[in-house]
Image (cartoon, rainbow, N blue to C red; front, side, top):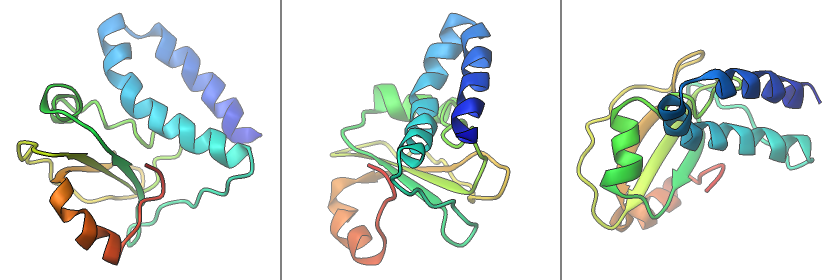
Length: 132
């Protein structure tokens, strides 16, 4: 599996980073790695497009952890294996508006935003996440 070989190569790069950087990037890189492993195990994972980015939903988030990491740019590697257009939606009961605005684009870091659980019914009526 070519993607798993790429994971091994990036694992070495990850291991060489300073401990703080490595830990801060681990959250987002785990998303990308999970997507790759699921695909390699036969659970088909589609590649995001500009019109329909691959979408991760992160539930049970907090301002102190996930939003803080996103504000500092540490979710930029949520698509580090393929750099396909990707969206990360960080959910919790009450999150501050992180002001994380961008567009999912080919070869770019993912679009990251926060949302409260109150919008889930509306979101689920119009779109579904690829991984939760």
